[in-house]
Image (cartoon, rainbow, N blue to C red; front, side, top):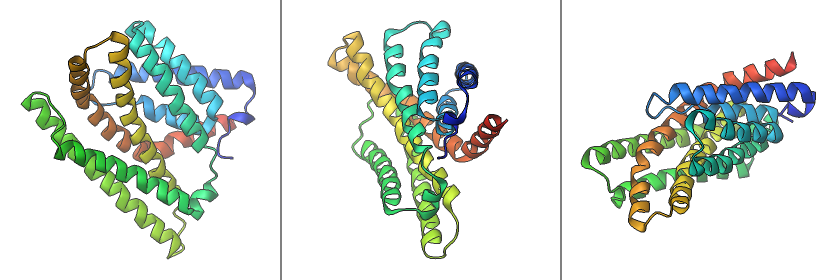
Length: 254
């Protein structure tokens, strides 16, 4: 198995969870001053894929509660974080159990799943832009439309590179398992980031008892946060997942 969490003594496991939880809180606080930069997803994805579902979920729950000491106990934020981040940790804790040999073989289900995820995200971007869904001020609308195209282009590039790696793997017998795994993880992380905002668009109006108009306004303005975060997630996972997960694995082996 790829995860190493089950091999760690309980005391060490608790210590690693505590350290990662502190890093998540510190990372969110530091980068909260930079619009659109989101580091929590990357750190939690790396930690969960290395340490497994249990450690990842415990870390996510602890982070979701302890961050309230800085940002306050907002009911909507607490519910959102307790639903989303443990789910994210469970997803990548499960993905971390997939052996590298599976990515090297690149089975049909993996190819189909990654292609569907990327095509779904690209289609969503095209529909939002094509049907003029975003109803905000002209300035924010222009910014959102630019970011939509950035996400579309990033997903298209991911799709092209991923399928090129698959062809190299299947036709030319090249060992492309590691980059295939990287692009698969980045695709899942990007979709999860979009789901975070959509979940927020459901939970916040329900908890606050918002009117339909207020809920729609909240939904439209949330694009300005979701789009740069999605771009950030794709880029950070593609560039930093491998070195960070490698550091975590080395820390465990000591």
